[in-house]
Image 1 (cartoon, rainbow, N blue to C red):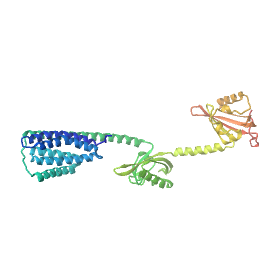
Image 2 (cartoon, rainbow, N blue to C red; image 1 turned 60 degrees about the vertical axis):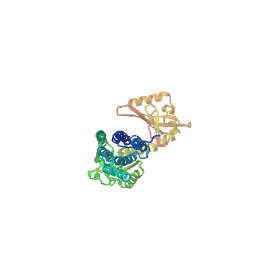
Image 3 (cartoon, rainbow, N blue to C red; image 1 turned 45 degrees about the vertical axis):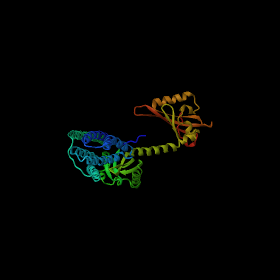
Length: 424
């Protein structure tokens, strides 16, 4: 499988291959007629026609392709320093070559790159001079000089185009980021949920405007302890969960309570997620006010407890006739378990020892006046007979449509129910 490499590796490969091909021609013109042997010409071809492709292969195969390319640029400087020294420093070849290599390194690594290019180029020239002797002949073949100057001009224009393209991409990216931040800010500042950003110690970095409907501005100051006003019993647990979110990187869900500026107690369901920004841990905390939901749950729990523990049997039936719920007293009275009746048609459990018209009369009364009360003899699941008092009411919505029927039952055979009216 081909290793993925940095895009700059291909860009500089294309630049290097083109520039070195042009240098091959220019240096060949400079060398022509000056007594260079076959080995020099072979080295020229190897350096300027083969070498760029070998460097590209090396950088592509490296574990860190960009780092390998930086090393390639310094190697260019070293080898070109040797060539310029071997050619006796022809001015209009040596100057463009040095400027080009220095620009390459400066673009990639700033002033450090430019300094590295100078040192590598100088070291290469010095090494050749120590081996073969220092000779300086600044005369440059006019054609070679012209070719190098045109090449340097084209090279600078190419680098400028690359810089312009990168600058435009950066500008477009910043604009897109600015618009994205604007969109997220609009969402955040108009969200009903509480959205906050905290540092690793739980201090405020940002609080959405929805916080200001609950807490005074002084509590939300940047750098203040965001957990200081939580209920005492929730504070330590919440801090521990925030620390866990930072250490594990996993979202943490929890519930906490606090007393708002108006003195009312609120409960929140929260999710904390950590991320890293500029090397520092940050926590995004999204909290939903569940106060009304929790109060409703508590109310429903009380109602369910009352329903389940009523002395009288109770049945709730949907408008379509499906039994929704029965309580414990119903099971005791009729002998039918909750799992036997819930979800099934009420018509399957009509235990009254009455003709079908009896239930038609009940249905008509519920349509007319919304309730019915009466007594009848009924049969339990085990076949035993008892005298039952029953009261049924229709439950209607705001539009007047019947949604449920609620029925109460009692065994009036028992003395405790002897005071109930017997309606037949």
